Length: 228
Image 1: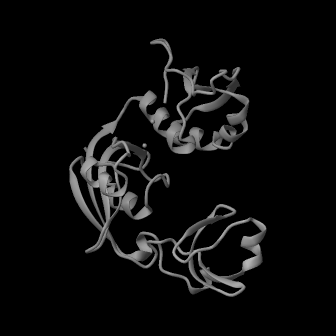
Image 2: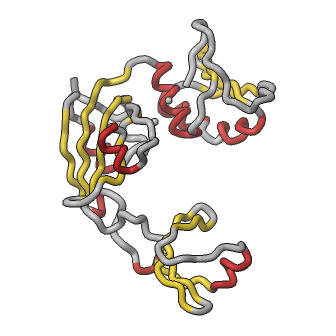
Image 3: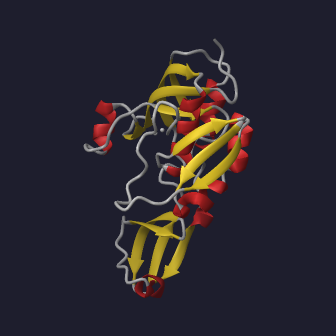
């Protein structure tokens, strides 16, 4: 069985800096090195749809179910370091936000993650490069299976886009996702992706939010549901 673009696959993987430490995994023994409390579970994604590193996608397309070791140079992984992304930010910017910058700390600047390099007087040197930029990485990947079930594919996409578990159903080539008003507009941003990947038109139906603010419980056997 040869894998193609838009195939959904379930994998176990571990990513390491070459000759270095683990930086990502969904395998229990490796995940514990990153976060002892994290739950290890298989990752389902669609090939060729930017749900994993492009270098991984490119390698796996055309392969069969099995185990692979993939070494990626920086340009195929997290990019080369860019000196322009190392910037000086006035201390007043941090003071206005009541934040104390400390060397080595990571901060979110309007959605951009940056590391504090130095703090000197009224200036703070900040690095917006990905922490893995400029590094060769190695992935060990085990393809467990190709996913054929449409419900599993939908669950994977919902989880990937929202990190939530929403009730859904399919009617007449239409995917109906039930959500509260808070997520309705956000989900609508992915209408084109659901159509492109699954060939289903997305319809979002708002339902009354539960008082305890928990996500929706799994639906009955007559419905479908949600996914890494």
